Image (cartoon, rainbow, N blue to C red):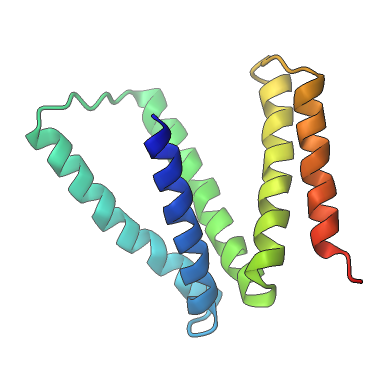
Length: 139
């Protein structure tokens, strides 16, 4: 549903804003450790509500493995995101990080998941890179 994308974008923008604000008030390593603790509280409440509503929460051994691996990468991402935002402005660091992540994810999708792409996709990636270059140009 489109509302999920909209809400994810809104909360993501708020997270970046709060990280920038907190990185000036707490060491980035401490901030990146505290954020997931508070996120775990919110996620735990969501799980409890889902269980109360009778939602079948699928869990497999592979699911646990991939979640653990994802948690490892999420932890590393959080550390470097806090460090980046403590040194650079939100308007520079955020686009650089996410355009780079889009390029890497695109390559992973093609080479590991054998996803298809076309010239419009390549044009979109090229425009994102051009946009990133324009953000860093100084006139």
